[in-house]
Image 1 (cartoon, rainbow, N blue to C red):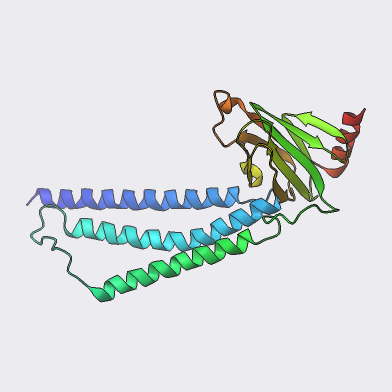
Image 2 (spheres, rainbow, N blue to C red):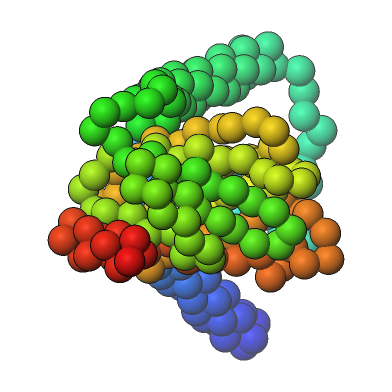
Length: 243
């Protein structure tokens, strides 16, 4: 009997530590997501807006499931006289969780469709106010052509901030994938075909570009940079390239 209070104290301490770590981990996760959702482009804003909506639905469901799991483990832990019984058929319960799952999936589908239907995601063809850039992939490098400015560069894609951009993504050899996670951009590059991305960068800075489709022994080195500049700096850069 003398060991019972000590064991009870240790159990409470352990449970308190687990709860504190869980709350701390959840707070860190939410703060990280909030930091990542800071707008860098119109496309990125749409993606993180959708992710935040789904997050607010996922967190309560996760907490509910984990609470039920922890309660079950605690109630039927070793040493308890009460044993867990086999689950009996319960049509009302089955209908409830089936309908609940359907509602959650319907919400996810409607929210996702609302983002996919937005203009920055759905390519609407050439636009007079958009900067056209041809993104050409090949083993194992990137080339960027600005047809209206008659400028061609490699490795670094330079874009002006707060201006609509239309990227025409293609490949010279086989399948690659243009991916700039910091700007929320991803599009496959197929030989002889053009896939399009439309976005407006809203924050200056350097963003990592890499190929997201395994394309051979040099795949890991197929890297590049996207540099978003102020309008005046971008124009100066164009002038330097034309000299």
